[in-house]
Image (tube, each protein chain N blue to C red):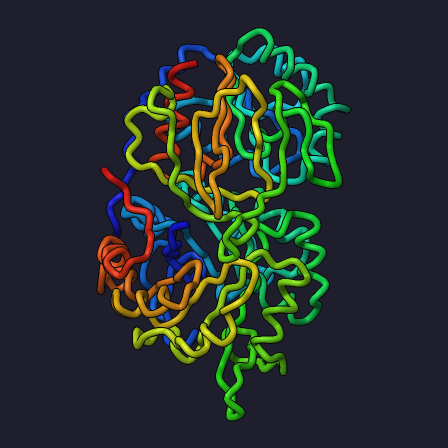
Length: 253
Length: 221
């Protein structure tokens, strides 16, 4: 099955923003415009992450999802600030295909089970934002890499799958926004052997970085910086993946 | 730096001329995606919940994501199952999508075994890839091989479509398989019986190729 290339769009409503290590945000532009352009250029999936996700702003992300789903006909994943089953229902109704959960799952792991039972595992993604600790292990964090959870990323990923997560998104906080390449050791040690799709995120700055992650056998690669700052095109990333022997979706037209 | 407004290129143009298109709502999944894709193609489709509205439709889209047991229960108690069977028997154009394909068969192994609509002979079984690297649910874009003469597949810009499913149809004798894909083994990705056509993937989420296929259904029906 082709490897998925996912455009990750961090949202601080109403803007698309980009930071470094999930902080220091710069405004990039209009999210829906970018999502539509990436779709036309052959992206396989769009991921909106509401990085403010305060309660009083919930409506803006829902409106954005609705506006995006009117013109973007590839799968749309939405994360950030999801706390209840009703939050998920609202986003799915607005046009999201999958939701991505981090903090709420850490606080109450059974939320994953409830969400998967209600909507099906296929639309529940659990995000693990990890930072390497002195012990050499990766610890899961919440709140854009600011809050310790005490959870070991390897164990937490497996627990999340047992509870019903249909996909695991692995973010290396140290690499995110740096364009220095993905944390391959993290992706290998935590992601390999999981029975559900694994998406690697954080650090792709050039096609070779994507190839390195693909070589580890991930199911998807999420990119942001490289597209938002127009370092490389989706076609260039996919061509490099294809040249390295990975199957990708390329439109003939 | 505002990006240009790109539109997905669709070569199948829909002439709606008063045709009533119904999207069957039985509580399973994201119907608005299908409705928006139709709207993008110039077709104002109605989301329909009651059998009489279904009876008045010129063409029907039977979508669905979710579990077969709950879906069949809702279809049966709402009267939609009978109305859909009648529409199919009358030869009205119907497009089944994902769970909508599976429910057309006689039974599904999901939820411990569910009797389905039985419009088509055959059964639905759990996807069991021979290759352990192939994960279930089968989720993502995959290459689809269409029967060369399948009308919906003519002139598609790409042959990759988006799938999300854990079960697959095993059509019985007499059912024409019009599409196949591979996930640790070949599986049925589409069937046709006259003006009833159904696909396992999601055209409404499959970019330009999906819109083109959906456009062909709307234009042909």
